[in-house]
Length: 279
Length: 249
Image 1 (cartoon, rainbow over the protein chains, first blue to last red):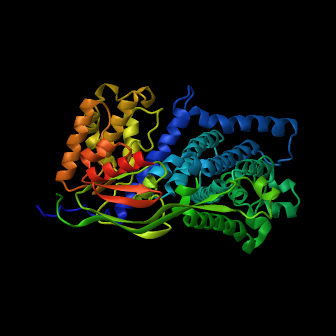
Image 2 (cartoon, chains in turn green, cyan):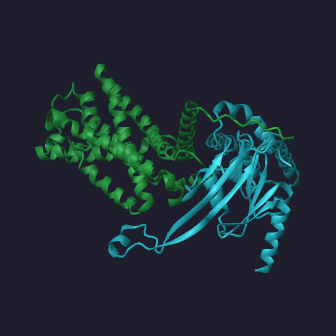
Image 3 (cartoon, chains in turn brown, red):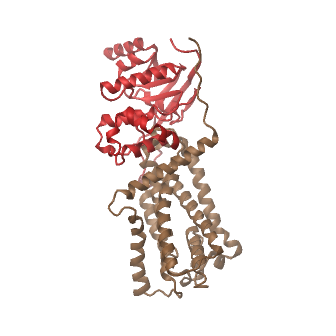
C-alpha cells in the first residue's frame, strides 16, 4: 500500500531544444498557413505585395522621373531593395505585437517565451524565401552567372534575420508597456524607407548622407547583397560600407546589428518571467 | 488512503502581490501630460503566506470565492507567474498547461489542431503520429477529423482538448475549472481516466467552483479566501465549511 510510484525522468537538455525547435516550426508554419492558405490566391499573396510595390516604383522612378541610376540593372537593384525591406518591416511589425496577440497562450502555458517572437520572425522568413525565389527567377532571366562570392549572400541574409529579430524583440518588450509603439514604428519605417538606398542609388547623395545611411545595418547589407549580385554588370555603381566608412568604419553597421540583437535578447530575458502578468 | 508518503508538491509561505496602477498608463500621452505625477499603485495581495503540501497520488481540490487567489496559486505552481516571496517545490514532472485546448485555432481542422496543441503541450512529432488514432477515437470525432473547429459544438471541442491533454506525460496535473467534460457518456470515460491516473500514482490539483466534483474526486480540499488558506482537510469537510461560510455571509 505504501509503495511509492515512480516519477518521470526530467527531459534532457537536448530533448528540450528539439522540442523548442519543433514548437517554433509548427507554430510558424500554422501562422503562415492561416495568413495565406485560406485566401483564393493563397501563397501568391506573399509575392503580390513586393511585386506591386516594385511595379509602381519602377514605373515612377525608372521611367517617369528617370533617376540617374547610371547602371543598367535598376530593376534588379530596386527589386532586391524592396524584397529585403519588406521583410524587415513585416518581421519587426508582426513581432512587435506577437506577445499581445498570443496573450492567452502566455497566461495558460509554461514555455520559454522567446518561442513566440522567434516563430513570428520565422513566419516572415517563409515569405522572404518565396520572394527570394522570385528574385532568382529574374536573375536567371537576366542570365547573371553565379560565382563563388554568392556564399556570402547567406551570411548577409542571416545578418538581416538577426537584425530583424533583435529589433522585433526590443519592440515587443516596449509594446507590452506602451501601445504607442505601433504608430511610432509605422512612422519610423516609412521614414527609414526613404532614408535608405532602396529606390535610389546611394551615389546620388552627398558623402555625409551616404555615411549616415550606411550605418543602418539593413542599408549596409542591402548594398552588400546588390554588390555581390550586380557588381560584374555595374562596377562602381553600388556604394557599400567600406567605400565610404573606411576599413574600421565598415564595422560600425555590423556593430549596430550585433548591439540590436544582444540588446533585444537581454531586454527580453529581463522581462520574460513577468510577461504573463504584464500583457 | 493514498500511495506512499512522498510529497509531490510543497508550497512554502507563498506570497503574491500584484501592483495595480491607479490609472493604467500605457500610452506616451499619459506620460507627457502628467510627467510629474508619480505612478501610484495599489498593492493587491493575491496570496498571503500560503503553505501546504500535496502527497504523491493525491487529488487536491482548490475552492473559494471569485478573486480568492485560486487561479493565481495554480499559475504560480505551474511556473507561469513568479511568486513575490516563497517557494514551490515539485517532485516529478508538472503538466505545462492549466487549461484544456491551449492554442486551439478555430479556423483549422482537428488534424491541424492536434498537431498544434499537442506540440505546444510538448508531444513530439512521432508521439503525435502514433497517438493520433487514439486521440480521435477517444474524442469520438472520427467523422469530423477534417472539419474546421469552428464548426464543432463546444462539447466536441472540449472532448478533443481533453483527449489530447491525457496523452501528455506528467506526474502532477494542474487544471483550472474543467475536470470531467462533455455529455454523460463522455464524462464516464473521463472518470475512467482519473481512476487510471490514481492507479499510476499521478497527482492532481484541481481548481473548481464545482463543489460536487471536488467532493466526488478529491481526497482533500483547500479553501482559499482573500489569498489565505481558510481550511485544508478531507474534501467533504472543507466543502461543507465553505458552504456554511457562504450561508453565513
